[in-house]
Structure formats: structure tokens, C-alpha cells
Length: 471
Image 1 (cartoon, rainbow, N blue to C red):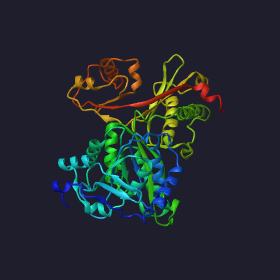
Image 2: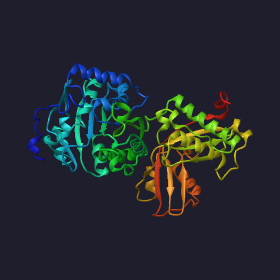
Image 3: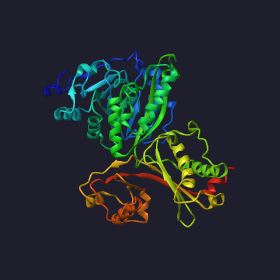
Image 4: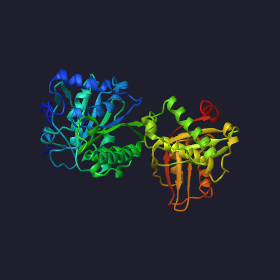
């Protein structure tokens, strides 16, 4: 392995290593197979900036990879570069490795490498150069035919990720993030060679950790591409991405023996400003909140939630708040989760009932109150800790009308959702009221104060029309 700068000269084209084994070796058969896989799946209405997709043979994981790549179809004309990050299976690796090739070949032709960015990374010492470690590696190569059928003009930046801290990978991803022309693709399978039921249980836990943006929650045995995934999750926390699982299966579901399987998933990561539920999904979620309140009024408990019957965006792990308001706008209850810990649909149902019956500021909800209520739902991004020198600096960093804020000290805690700015548009007034909510005085300040900010997607509806079409 070498990092010599002189080796950065373009050294030809990397030949395919697994054509004819992991995917068809002849162009017509390969193009037909990829097109057929993409035709079988939906786009899900997502707009991902990053993807996790599997890298096994197409007969095993091709349909799951297609589910991820199909989410890029609506904006495929805008994408010009794909950064590929994946594990190496052939040799030990510390850090990151690129090859010196100018292009990567498949039976469908040659995909050019973003040589300019690669060489800049080498000059900066961020990556090392090794054609050898790339020569027989399949994790990045198997992604190329999908890219060739999706995009007319795209360059790739293939990077193998060895043992490295999540923060280092997050820093590299941030450096390569780019604009709408760039997509980050993490190549990873999930559990390996467990029984079917064991794999399903372990893979479900892995996917839940990824949706929670929890790098520490992903164990060694849960994903071969864990180092790259952990880095993406660390970056996702810092910049407000939302993860949605568009598929999860294993080789026992596709073409393999169920006694010894490998797990596969496709997960889309969207910037929060783009990760918005469509109108139909919002109405579905609001309807479930309203019906949960009615169920609790009648039976004294929250209804059971069959998570699998809902669409992927509602099944994904999210943190939510539910706010109940009277007809005159006065608050009637508000309860929520600051961090994701369960599927969104279940979180909303449980928080709806808690807002109606467990908010200590109000009496339990009565049946006659239901028709006059408005229910509001806020879906939160992951809270990010603020760094500041003093109170004035903290206030200056807040973005009115946008930031939700959590204030925490060893003895107190208070949270304001972004919509609180509507009644308290000035930073100083907003912050004083937040202190009061936390049980502190308006002039309180301490070096022990911690502030976290988050953003939310919020929507609301009167309860009455939500209950008209159901019994």
C-alpha cells in the first residue's frame, strides 16, 4: 500500500472483478436485469441526499438495492456525482483508501472517477492510495450498473472505509457533501449467516438504530459496512437528516436457504427541509391521533397499533410532539418525545393519549371536549447541542421561527417547540419564557446550562372532521 503523490497520475481503467458472478457478465442481460429490478419498485416520494444499499449478488439483494436507487429517479437528471463508501473484504485497512484509476468498468461501459476531488483528498492526507485493495473488492463495484442505468452522465468517487472513528468518516462525508448534484451511497449488508428468525430480529434492531441516527447502537455483527454507516449517522445528527427505511429483507426472502441468511436493507437520508410528509400521510397521522383520543375516552387506554400496516415514513423511528388546543386557541395538553425511540405512528398515538390524559397541567379529557379540539403534530429532528461562550452568544445563534430549543441544567429542564416563536418573536422574550418553563428565574444563567436545538415538521387539524368518516 502506498500514498506516494506521484502515483496519483491516471492509471487507466479498473476492470470488473465480479462480473458474471455477482451480476450478469454480458451487457444486454445486465441492462435488462437492472431495468427489471427498478421497474418492480416505487420511488416512495422521497428525495434522499444519501442512501444505504446492499452489495450481495443481484439474485439475493438486487431487489433491495433497486428499492433504494428508485428513490433517486425523480431527480436523476440533476445528479452528476455519486460518492461510494463501502467496506473492504479482501485486506486489512485503517482509514480510507482510493484507487488511482480514471474510471471503473462494467459490462455496460466505463464510469469516470472524480479524479480532481480524489487527488485533492490525497494531497490533504485524508485518504491513502491503493489499487491493490480495490482490485478484487465487490462492495463498490456492484453499485455501478445501477448508476449506469439511472444516470446518463455521472462520475463516481469510490472510497473503501476501514477501521475508523465515526467522527473521521463524518468529516470526510461533510467534505464531499456538495449540492444537489451529489449523492452519498453507503454500501453495506446487515447480519451474516444467522438463521432466518435470528437475522430478522438482529436486522430490525440495526435498522432501528440507523433510523434513530445512533452510531453507538450499531454493533459489529449487525453490518459489514458499519464504519461507513456510523460516520453517516454522526453527520446526519449534526445537519438534521431524517432516515427512512424503504426496505428490509434477507437472502431467505429472495433466493437463499433460510437456515443461513444474510440481511439487506435500503435506507434513504433526506435533509429535514425536504423530508416532509405528503398531504395524505399527514391526514393519516392526524386521523390516527384523533381516533386514539376517542378510543382512550371510551376505553381508558391507547389503542393497539399494527405498525406493519402503515407506509414506510410512518413506520420509521421518529420523535414527535402532540399538541391539543381548544377552539379559542388555548392549550389543552402537550406531550412528546425529544429523541426517536419507536416508530412514528406509535409515538404519535401514545403521545396523543398522553396529551389528553397525562399532562399534569390539565384534567383528563372528557368526551364532550373532543369535537372542539384541534390536534397538532410536530415531527422533530435530532437535537444538536449548541456551543456558545455566554448567554448573549447563545441568543445570537438562535434562529427565530425555526429553532426548537431544549434548556437543561443538572436540576432543571424545559423545551419549546418552534411554533412558540409565534407568540414570543423576540429572542430575549423566548428565552426568558423557556427559563420560566424550566422552573428557573428569568435572569438565571450558569456555566452548567446546556442548550440543544432542533427543527420540526408541524401540521394540525380540527378533530371533528377527522372523526366524521369513522365510528
